[in-house]
Length: 267
Image (cartoon, rainbow, N blue to C red; front, side, top):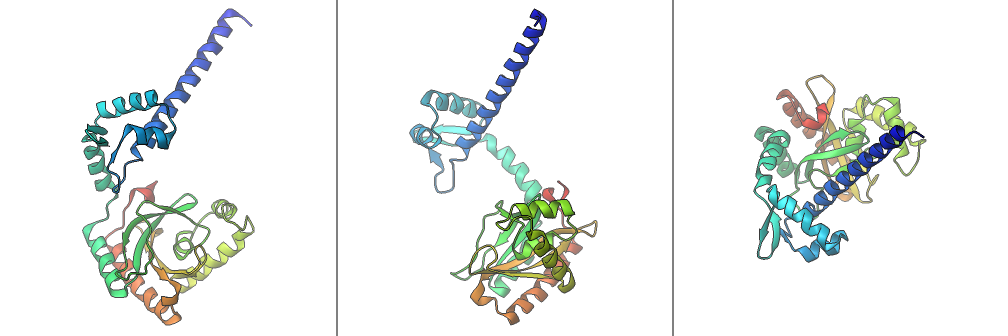
């Protein structure tokens, strides 16, 4: 091996190592920010060290960088979200928050039917909750906005997978507990949902949980999102499922008329 070639390979190795170190640093910084929650708005250095497993010197170095960029703010009790996050929060809200009219329609539906209303969009082999209005009843189904749920089961999955390619259906099936043979079941569910104009599920992902979903048609006439009502299976009788589906279709049509738009839909 010539000296020139050896030097080039050493430089490439050094660059790769630096890149890997940079990625690790970013991931560690994100992990630290992720320790902050509504229940714990301030986190101490000791808590960060204990929960991340990082050396104290590494934690302090990362905290200094995060504080310098305004992403964290030092207080006498520890570190809290910094003012630099305000700009990102504003951009996030502007990009992801649904129009007030859509939120109001979902709020009215939740109060009228007394079950939780969710709006999901597809993201690869997952469905992402982008909006929610909780049921007013004590016993209710709740997910967090931003949660990713699988597409291999559930009423909303049957709606969102309409028009999915064979390759995508195969990947969704492989991600399920049933393996690739689940493709046939998925196709059957999708066909039934198209024929009925809605989809229903009972205990497919979680025992005792039922849901009814309808599609929201986007500007391109494809399924842009799924609007659902979900709750305890005991309250989802056959008669109520039919009523829920009819109400959901009307609300989804009104949302679609306004032109449903969301970053994940175009992703």
